Length: 337
Image (cartoon, rainbow, N blue to C red; front, side, top):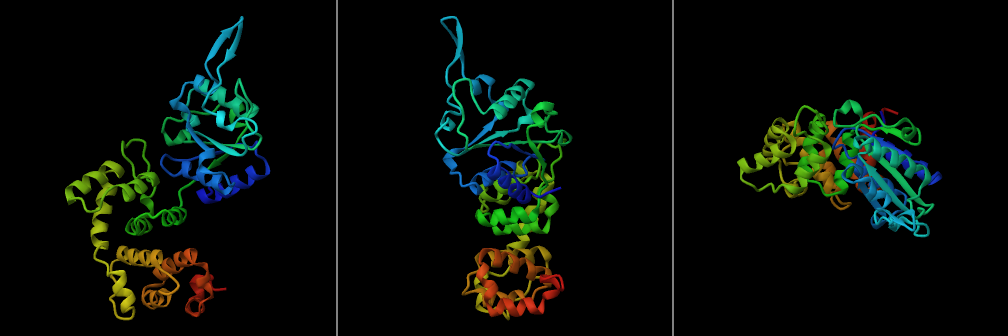
């Protein structure tokens, strides 16, 4: 099953070639399907104010078609404001129909016509407006229903799976807490552990909200309560215990001051935290000292640091410090080739 980043890449290329195509992203709740749609829009060069995310099941069909009225014996529709900004002549845009499999048959029937004809009862959409559809799978037991056959036949259905590497890349670009990133790299099974029988689940969306919204300086009991409310008791307990452990890691300043002397942590979770924190704050002028310290760690943590640092600063590949490290570690960095 392809990762989110792979599906984003394929969907973007399809929509570049054929604006009338309709990719459909399917997967578990909270795994980042909506963010993936926004990324497709950005990759297509569409600005945020031209991207509309519509939760289909939260609306009556008349919200999409416009309210009908009878004028001189004929039924006419008052223009709907929902899609008016995408009318013919307004240029490129993206409409995301969220959670379509959770919607009623009435909604699905409307969507089938809308996606095919690209019109409302009162105006046509611009030829450069694209569509994306998201939803859960029936087997996820999240309220999804089988789509109407003639609707599903009009779309490219992509099943997606969560990837810790994809989420890490996104999280580093969006200022997510480095300790949170390190924890989920250490426990990737918890990134999207959705169970329909639980009311609260650790999902990609839930972790991101937890790491960005809950103040870490709350009293312990209150912080634990907030974490439990967002990701569930078991996952929250693991995160809080790990966070307390990772807080004992050496400071980044002390590492860069004495990279050959500062102690290497013994706990794997703390090693992940150090490697992640260093990579997220590395700069060309700190790279040499970072490499001195990181080269004293086990190879898997060296790879964590180097991979992330190069993604943030690709030109570091041209430095003698990286080249020397890559030659010495070609067995892990280049698969031994």
